[in-house]
Image 1 (cartoon, helix red, strand yellow):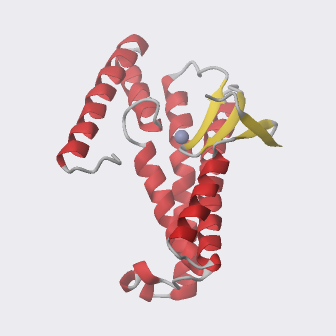
Image 2 (cartoon, rainbow, N blue to C red):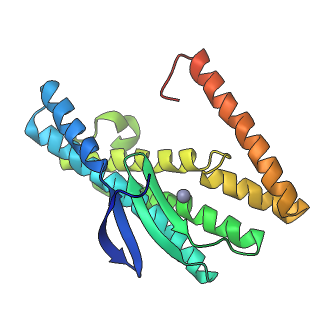
Length: 212
Ligand SMILES: [Zn+2]
């Protein structure tokens, strides 16, 4: 799965790779926008939005990788896929608390980004952002700000789902390990993860929202 990724950069001595299927995503967006009659400018805004969202995903992964480095855990590489990113750590830290901090620092990066962007948007647009959220400067590059804020909040919620391999699952396992030890933690985290997974499928089928 990770084999066909291009090495695009090395940052903080960590190779950053992009999976080739990324090109499919970009081709799909251009093709879809064109077939829906969107103007080149709107398509360009959307492409920039996607690239910026994945830049936020990259920063999220560096949140994990650079925190791990503080505990002498090195990162093999960071790979960006159309469905998200992954920082492949060489090993896990000894202490559950360290694992917890490494897991939580990814979503923390997105929280900081969301707060900073919200502050910028508020400074530029003032009070109207509260009443006019959906239509802020439609079709201009300023409309990227609300999109990016929402994307970062979505990344936090999605990653904190307490199920493996999401960050929330790692946090949950670390919390159980701190109280009951590692063996119990791995067992219970996997059982809880499966229950939550089944729950998601049930909600998806019930609400007929198959994207779930
Ligand atoms: Zn993460």
